[in-house]
Length: 144
Ligand SMILES: [Zn+2]
Figure (tube, rainbow, N blue to C red):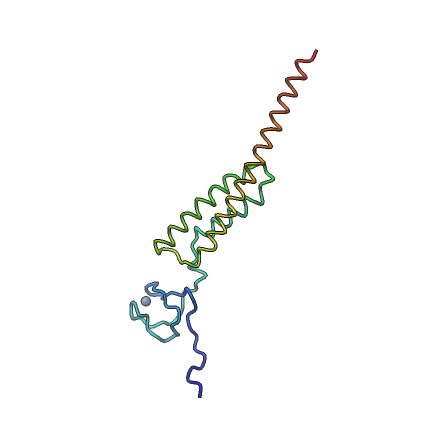
């Protein structure tokens, strides 16, 4: 009746453990079209996620969360998040990182830029406050 007794098939982004070839759609026991080794186990696509994309997204979020710290922590985090997002995108284009990481890299880039803007505003605010305090102190000193 049903020959296809629900064999475990590799989903999108799964790779051959032997050679890393994309084997999505293959079932356990079938042979990898690239290296010919029997597929005994799938490499999890989760483990294949680009570290750069993850770093970018995490730093982007940290950048936004820490924007109340006057940009001291958030600004560098935001800049690094944008840099890592770019590195991740280049790695994906070069084929050394899975395309599934693109969404995370984009999120990192967007969060990073939001973080840079928020932190720059906070940093500018801090500079203005310091300026006003200095001017106020100078004004007070000048007053007899
Ligand atoms: Zn293979």
